[in-house]
Length: 99
Image (cartoon, rainbow, N blue to C red; front, side, top):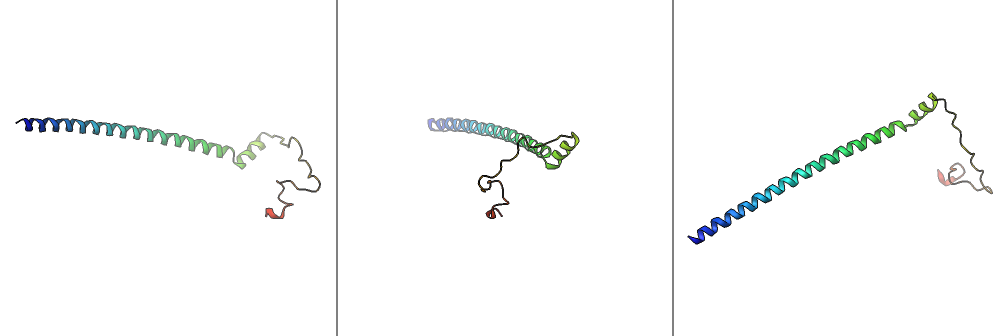
């Protein structure tokens, strides 16, 4: 009789522990799902911002903006001449390796 009572008591304890572990797993799953949704929302917001930046900085949009506002855009200072016949690193026309 004592062995049967101990078996029933231990089975009840194991069942309660299993229910607690199941509840913890469900809570963790819910939190993971919520975090995943937040990440997706943040990623969508970032993609929209990148799209807006790409639209506003597209060459045709910049040309249109400059043309509509009649901006006189000129360099602030002219490029310095090359020194002693050496070409600048940005000048690809004088460098045969730049092809």
